[in-house]
Image 1: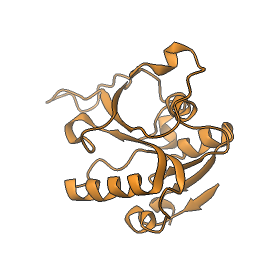
Image 2: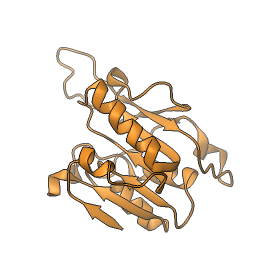
Image 3: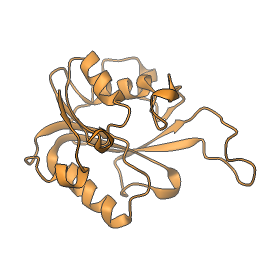
Length: 174
């Protein structure tokens, strides 16, 4: 495991071309289109396998993707007093790499309803079960996974659990 605590824009340009097997990340949702294009270009340059990016439907990541997945989040009543709440996040998959097929068919649907295990750990934590499924579907033991916006560290935790290497970055811990 390699941990960084720096601005991801600065960090990504340091990685050699095709140096990781899987990029799996949940970037901040307030990036401009230009920032998204820059980051996405770095993902494609760095990754020799699959790039997977979480994104809200109202501020989608880079189009087109090879596959679009959807995470139906647990229902919450916050912020519903004057508008509808968003209970869906999109997951953009840009595939060039591993696709493990030896698992039960239910692991390959494009709609997920996994629950966050403990939101107190991080306000934007993703469900470990969903991250685990994506890692198992798109990487092999020993593969290098990059999460340049690690936040709660769930990608690192699931990578370690399943024998993957992980590079993770969280500027908040700088």
